[in-house]
Length: 136
Image (cartoon, rainbow, N blue to C red; front, side, top):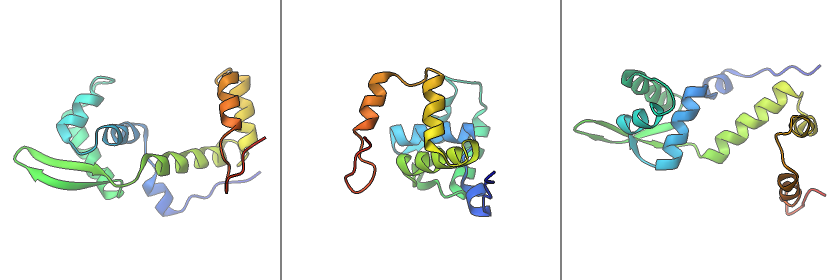
């Protein structure tokens, strides 16, 4: 069995569920205030405003976001790390941890669970893998 040994850097950069949701707000909306993130997150679950302030501070410490300006009513934040980069890292870590690095087992599991439609599989089969190669 393969074990995944995450280094300190990887554990620090890893996003929890709430941090990921906050990052999605930044990716979707661009530069945002704490209030912007709070208003969006509070549509989905009860979250205190101060928790959102703390979360954005943590994300800044993890170098996922940066403060781009300080306004009268607070800081304006911007995502530093791009969505594709973060989600790719998270997906790779998940496949390594849950499926021992086997993307095939992940896809099989999704198919068996009915989480992937035939049309999606056909679309995926046309995606370039690397250097212009397509999966066939």
